[in-house]
Image (cartoon, rainbow, N blue to C red; front, side):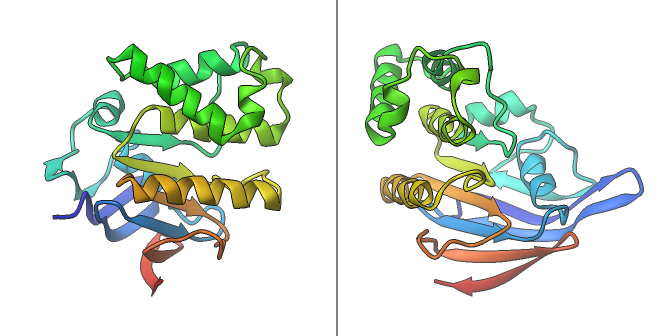
Length: 219
């Protein structure tokens, strides 16, 4: 049984359709890529999964449970993590405090400390600046922090909106390796991006054009 099922979902902002009859699914331990130009509906689709924007019709199931009617915080507590395109970091807080907030759903505080320590090992530059404010970080480091914070939530499914944005090629390499390592642990992910990266190992790819989603290729 798929981990996530999106079935004929439609999303509109007023009279403007943003997502049109979109269907796809994500298996356990699978990486799925959704490519498309800016403004074609990719982010709207992700926000619909999270319950941030309402759907006009269609169904979304996570681990066989319908997500319709659930609030975003309830969906996140089910095991869905999210890294938004605009990062949504708390700028006046430190790197450590932002990561701790990422793990607010965790009840085991010891495990949370271990997860944060693992992020510091995977991204040493963050470990060296744990007590720095977000405003003291360069844009590339802020992007890495937003992604690390999403992993700290220990999701079963992670939704990443434009994770490569602002990253140098070496950082893209590093992030692709980290994502692939977590996928091997069984963490599924959906990556929304304007451009594909051949470095990133994914199971299936989709293309979104003016709200319409079509399968691209199997890799």
